[in-house]
Length: 304
Image (tube, rainbow, N blue to C red; front, side, top):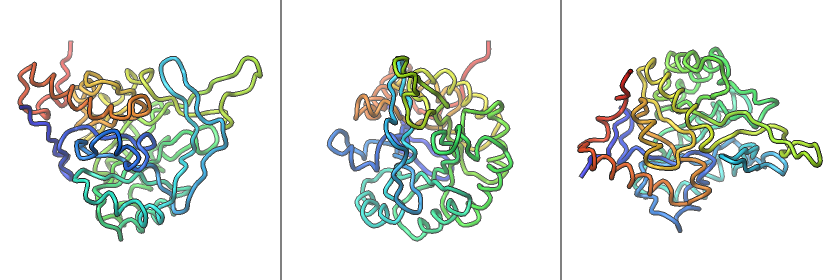
């Protein structure tokens, strides 16, 4: 049997597969389809201080090799989450990561301060990279200075680990990652979705009411693997990779590129128990190749 456990330094996972925020609800919605305890962990939908309706419809567009979404981080708000959802998650024996959102730096801090009073949370994923909330995809993770200062403020009020989720919509992702590391982030997750657009040629209107959205799915995987490789080779904190993972082989690409763990996103819409299947495929590959510990393949990509 292959040892699938991963130690991020601040958090031990039973296996390297988590589910990505925005694609797995608050976890409970998927209980009819898979055993949540089988996951390394899951990241809940993004939470603001108050409930959020998100963007007006239409806000989903299917593409030949992915999905463009402009949901706009719809959610129940951190207070309702703490009162109605979190108590049901505490006994799942898997890592619960809360995706933290904010309209400005003060709200990010306020969300974390509120969550600090709650139990059952393993870590925060700081969502500073969503491309479908502000005009033309603007977000803090596009620039090193806002990234640095926000993380510093979050770390000052958090006793829990902070995972910073970065944007692919930048020229130099390593620069942003190094700013996050310098500010004290405990880990980096990437990539979020790519800013995208689709047009209805009959109406000549954008297919999304928001005009732009975030592209996810298999189309972005080679780009995401490249960015994970670049970042993992330049920072010392753990990297969690994501972007178009549909199979165990896809996940293994990220691990070999340098990711210590992965998040499965769009695949959850196609196949609700995809993450559990992917864990099984990773284990089967490791056993077929004589790999005794999954952590032994992390960052083992070979140069030509």
